[in-house]
Length: 244
Image 1 (tube, rainbow, N blue to C red):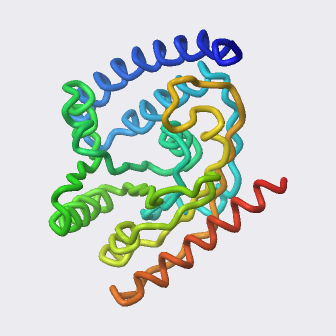
Image 2 (spheres, rainbow, N blue to C red; image 1 turned 90 degrees about the vertical axis):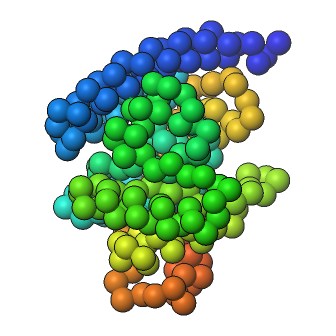
C-alpha cells in the first residue's frame, strides 16, 4: 500500500520526538527553577523543534525575518495547518514565543510541568468569558518577561483547506495589552502531517512574516476591523506562496 512507505519515517520521527520531549522537559523544568529567564529555555525549545524537523526530513524556508524587532513583544497571529505549526514557528520566528494550549495537555504529567515552567498559557474552553480575562492576564505577565504570545485564531477550515475565518480572541488580547500583531503565514505543514492522520511525510515548509500591525490607541470597538485586516494579510500571503 502506498501509505505504508511513510510508516518507517513516522515511527522514527515519533520515537525521536518522544525522547526529545522527555529531555527538553527535564531541561526547562530545572532551568526555570534556577534561572527563569535563561536563554537556555529558548534554545531548548528550538532544539526540540529541530529534532522533529530533521528526523522527518523537512526543509524550512523563512521569509520576512527583517519584519521582527527582537526588542519588542508581539501577539503573533498565524494560520493553522498541522501539529507541526508550533515547531515551525519556534524555529522561524526570532522571538521567545509562548502559545496557548488546551487544558487537556496539562493532564500529561511531565509535559504539564514543562509547559507551566516556561509560561505556556492554559486554556479552559468551558470557562468562556473567564478564559479571556485569564489569558489576557497571563499574556501581560509574558510581556513583562520580554516574551511574545502566538495564537492560531482560525476556526473551521473550508472543505478544500483554504484559510478559515478568524475568531476574535487574539485581537481582543492584542488590544487589551496594546501589543502589535505580527502576521505569520505557514504553508506546507498540512501536506507533511495532515490533520487527522498519524502518518508523517517529508516535504518543505515556508513560514512568511509580514510587517506588524500596530494596535496602539485601538479599543474594543476596533476588534472586528483588526481581525479582518490581519486575515486579509495572511490570506494574500497564502495566495502569493501558492503562486511561487
